[in-house]
Length: 353
Image (tube, rainbow, N blue to C red):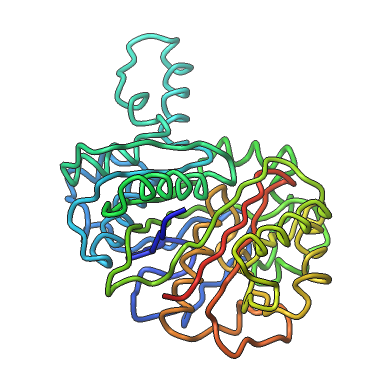
């Protein structure tokens, strides 16, 4: 696979992560099992007239896409690839509610059109006037990584392209409550900062967006995505074996990994995937977690890429991320692993430029 460099990245999350001069210096506490993202000033990126018609997903996506492009110095991408687990749920729910309330009559198609999963990619393209390749992947918790794999294939065919890749998911009233009913979200409110110590099932739900510009190496490059792999279903021991093979495939050993960014989410039923690794092959590696800061959603793993890039850029690791006593001397190779409900596993290796 050809080189795939992150030349710009931006993230909207439950923490104030849109300030380029701050790296989790100020944290927002949450004490509930469902909470929204920390909104930037969208008016800085979207015209007020257009913003009134945009759902939360679209606002987050358009804003982070603009920020990532600005960070990279790219004005017009050669492709737009977006990923989402649930799409624009808010507009979907509004359309379904209108069907019920109006007895399936006198419906306007606007909400239906804006509720499709590819709405964010389309709105980003419309705002930029971009008529290039535009596709959306819906692969559950591996949606963000699937976008990267598509971008890697494009760069292997034509290395000079600049590809805008992003992941977006939002909270919506009814569908989020359904996830609570089926046990995906914790029944009781929780002090989210202590999420990783939870001994109950389910996690905490939030929302967010991460966009990045991928291409060949430039003077703005933050990291090189060495490889990405997704696995539909596997046991904890199979995941451990897969990660060992994944690292060896890059011509590295586990001793060459300086830090691992893990997706622990406080779900006692499925965090054993992480704990099995933390107590074995990762025991001598610096371990970092983030979902006790931003909650969980299908493309939350994109935040892990933002974290790794910020670590490379600042040479700092905020103490709130650390979950073991190992401290790396340098951060040259960072491994990321995430899963959700024991499915949609993703492994990625990022290397300092």
